[in-house]
Length: 262
Ligand SMILES: O=P(O)(O)OC[C@@H](O)[C@@H](O)c1c[nH]c2ccccc12
Image (cartoon, rainbow, N blue to C red; front, top):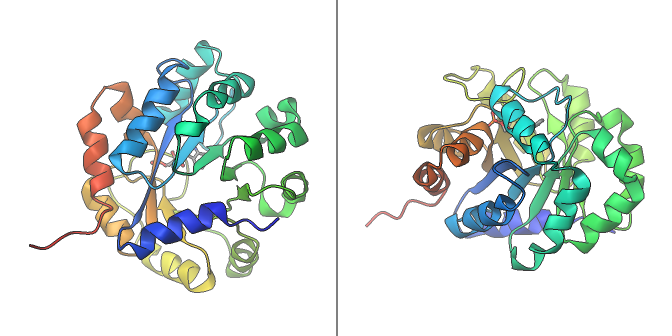
């Protein structure tokens, strides 16, 4: 099946003149019953899509903020199975795409083909699996073949050009352009190579390109959306929910919207 749902939602946002804003939340942080509240709040605040993290005991790409959120979530037994059960009750109220971010292991214990079927049934629009590199992703592509669940690739700053070309060509949904070397978490400054990196990915890709990692202020959202089609913001959103600073969330989303000059 062709993977259009996720791309189409982002393209629609872009054609309205806004940039794409994708907040990341850790499912189960604050309690499993908070999942619905947080997803609906982000939808209401104007998020284009939501990246939903599945807690995992060995989250190699996660920085301290996301790791701690994962530990809180594991304490309330937010397993993939319980999260999917929670989504059963809310998916009909969600009108923006949900993208699940999980490591390989939770999916494997769930059963790959069951997981693919459940994602399709619940309208999940994409998957991000940071520990399955492009070269080993066939097993996931096969499991997702009959679904409209896109396998979103991560492109790192250090990938050689030939590899970037392959990853981008096989990319579905959008391209996740990682803006820093290392793990997730807020940063003060970005590498000056980033401008060229984003530019070359944008030239190669015919689906939207999101910049993610290290973005935590409205100024950074504006800077990144001048180079990419949109941003993914994780740690800053996770922290804002944890501290109940809902205003910060609204300010970040707003920075991705078209400025109306009156
Ligand atoms: O937290 P940051 O620096 O804003 O980055 C987004 C990131 O948290 C989110 O997309 C994410 C959370 N865990 C990941 C693991 C790999 C890739 C991406 C992620």
